[in-house]
Each structure stands twice: as C-alpha cells, then as structure tokens.
Amino acid sequence: MLKQKIKNEWQEFCTLMKNVPTIVVVLFIISIFAMNLLANKSITVPVEWLAMDCGIIISWFAFFTMDILTKHFGPKAANEITIVAVLVNLFFCFLMFIASIITGVWGESFVSGSEAVINNALDKTIGGTWYVVLGSTIAFLVSAMINNFSNYGIGKIFKKNQDSIGVFVLRTYISTAVGQFVDNFVFALLVSHFFFGWTIVQCITCAATGMVVELLCEAIFFYPAFLITKRWKKNEVGKEYLELRVKEMADESINNGN
Image (cartoon, rainbow, N blue to C red; front, side):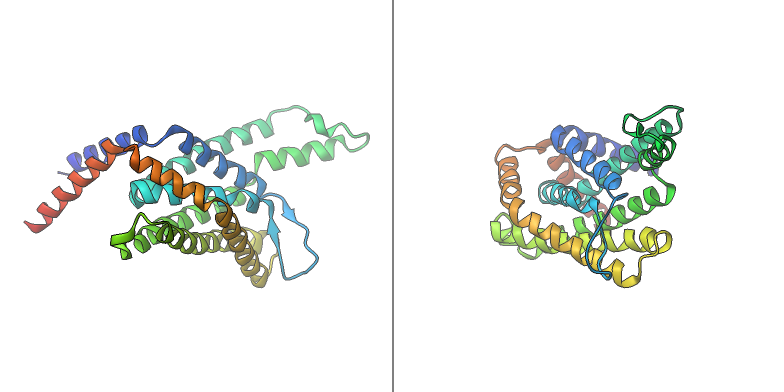
C-alpha cells in the first residue's frame, strides 16, 4: 500500500514537472538564487531602527510566481515546485562554495595594496556562509508554505468568483503580505539578530518594510500575473496534471468513505 502510494506520488510529481511551463520554473529558481545572494548586502538607511538587505529587490518575484502556480495548479503543486527550486538553489550554492575555495584571483581584486583583502571578501561573498544559506532556506520554505496555503484558502472562500480579478488581487495581496513578513522576519531573526547584532525592533521593521515593498511590486505586476492565469486556463495548460489530481482526490474520497 505504501509502495503504491509512493509510486503514485512520484508519477504525479513527474506529470507536474512536465506540465508546468519551463520558463516559469527557471525564473522561479533564478529569483531564489539571486535573492539569497543579494541578502549578503545590507542597505544603508538614515535611521537606526530600520534595517534592510538587497534581497528585497527581487524576493517579490518568487512570491509572484508562487501565487500564479497556486492559482492554477493548487498549493500542493506550488509547494513541490518550491522544494525543487530550493534544492537546486542549495546545489548551486554548493558549487559557488567550491569556486570560492579554489585558489585564484578575482578580476575586481586588482587594487594596489588591497588584493588579498578584496579577494578574500569576494570569496566569502560568493561562497556564502552556512548560517546565511541555512537561515534563508528555512525562512523561504516556511513562508512559501504559508503563502501557498493562505492563497489557496482565501480563493476557496469565494467559490463562485474564483476567476475574477478582485478575488485574485485579494488572495495575492493577503498571502504575499503574510508570506513576505514571515520570510523577512524568520531570516532576520535567525541570521541578522544572532550573527549581525540586529535588534528585535530592527528585525520587525525589516520584515514590515520588505512586506510593503513586495506589496508595491504586486501593485505593479498583479495584472500581468492575472492575465497569465487566465491564458493558462484558456489554453488548458497543465491539463494532464489537473485531471490526474481530480482523479486522485476522488479516489481518496472514496477510500476515506470506506
């Protein structure tokens, strides 16, 4: 029974990966990799109680993608693709770490008298540190699950108008606000608070500021996202996977009834 369950889940996952547009998965993975790399650079702000990092300029795209995937394929599919993206990100982080420990000189380190210092700094930035990678991975996984399930849950409330732009905006804004706050706060708490000396107030303000920036980006890009979901439904994108999910949910319902 368990063996068959695992086999069915694997078949469903393979069908999902075949049905999701490749460009969406690629851009999703790139956004996760880029925001984790950019999180190494803090942003200088004129007030002590506010702290931010450069990951904020691209992290919105990951949530933008998850909202589209959740709307069309459901939260389970969005979560599975998120896990795949995180694993790919960790693999490339490992490759970047290997590159950082290979003996050599970065082109930007050729500054008279400072070559060794700059080269070492570049190695550490590209190679990353275990706590930044671990913190960002945990924060994103937790926030992604919250974002995807909350997005789906809000959509279920409006059963008769799930495809309307109003419902799409509502589910996207609320899930992104909650997910982004959690992502920024968990990362700031696990990494910035313990390793960079941020105060709890700074962690909270960073999370809130990040959330606001993401919502502003949603205000700009929500309509293209809405059009994408409409086009996918019209063109029956992922039809094979969606039909498989309906069949499996029906089978589970029958089995539970028995």
